[in-house]
Length: 114
Length: 113
Image (cartoon, rainbow over all chains, first blue to last red):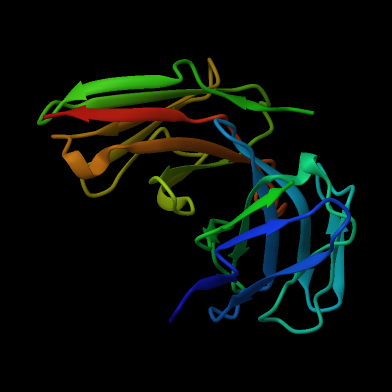
């Protein structure tokens, strides 16, 4: 299994541009998550999904949107990029049925908004 | 909301010595805890977890201790190696059926050769 994969690895955006961060998992996990990690800080939950077609807001959802049309994919959309969205973004997934809720993370996308 | 905090932001340990990384949590309802390791430029990697009905769990070179009385969690790494240098996060889960985790800020562990 490849686990959780994210693309791109790095991206520089201008203020007001939009982009989609891609996330795919091949572990048949029901749950998927998007976090951001600012320098020297912990992880903050942006959005999460408990299954295809179901998404919910996390701690810091403003400025982001998500969709979950399949079990495998959970893209994160930034519509109007702002400097405050400069961060490293991690996608994670957890729990096939019957497993512990430990989350498994992708390698991250480093985003800079100038 | 509730948060998970760490006592020390940085820790330096001599190679071969044991490391102890501490974590305080504030929500007594939390019933599942995880330690993650994050190497530079990478995503967090699962190390070990523990349910609240346990006070100790051992893995390969790692042990997690849970003290519910004082809401304290620790990660012990035996015979540290250079590859153990990383940031370590604890995370708590508020009841086993809730999929959300709350992460602490992290402790940077540096192994001195």
